[in-house]
Length: 338
Ligand code: FUB
Image 1 (tube, helix red, strand yellow):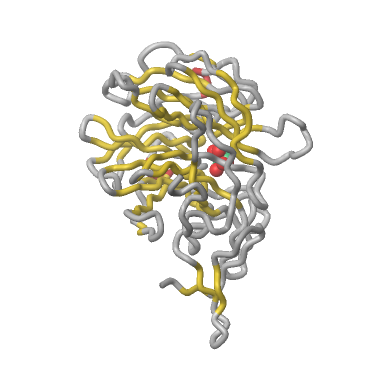
Image 2: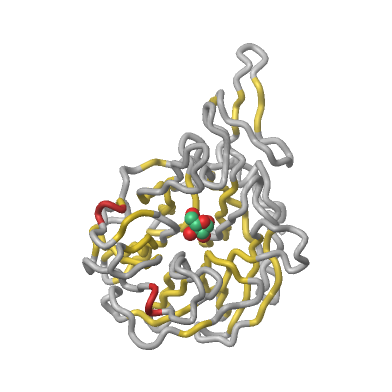
């Protein structure tokens, strides 16, 4: 049983907390949101390996007045979706000789008996702008080392982009034929095939930007349907914070059909970022919000916290809208047993 004094929440739903009359301490049911409460984290990317789900994240360390301060990537693991184990940092900006700052949204994938971690960062002045690198490890918990010694994708490789931070937020996916693909981007969404060595592109970069796209793409497949889920702008223009929307396709090369919104905005946060996995018979949607307070540090744009919700599908393969809750996965899914 986990007892906690210091967390506060700014979003409402059925409470998964109880307060002890004797001590005033708050008891939080395991699996409640946010799932990790002692560190500000963002941009969750799950990877299932055997009976364990590894969650790759970036580490938010912004002080008041800073937008972001992100210097390293971390991983947490769980076998039950309720208790999470922290591991030592898996990669730092300082480990990438080409990178200056901004350890933003990562994703890891298993291939060739190794683990590949794709990470965006600000490139040094030889290739100004954001770039994407790849690091490799024999273990899902690292440590990872730069697999190339140079960025895999740099700003000049996507000349259509109108700003310097478009090459961020990599998502990596291996198709049924064993071919791996990488998609990424802010404002524009791009996709390219990876060579079997996972550290070089194999062919052209193609733009696949879906409607209302902002950033944070996540590729996955369920049965014969492919999904591109992403942070989006509200189509009505009323809400200026990011939502989550998605598109589906009959193959990884498209054509992609816009399917509408999966979630609204995250509590107290301009950004939101999807990560999707099937684990032990359930599908999960990982997100972040900025509703966690740790000590005297309140949630903020650069101080976010990871949440998770059950993800359900309709018979036609579309995903059911997800409501962001405080109880998260501390309770069974609403349609359990149906
Ligand atoms: O965490 C830094 C950036 O904010 C990510 O790259 C975006 O997806 C947004 O979450």
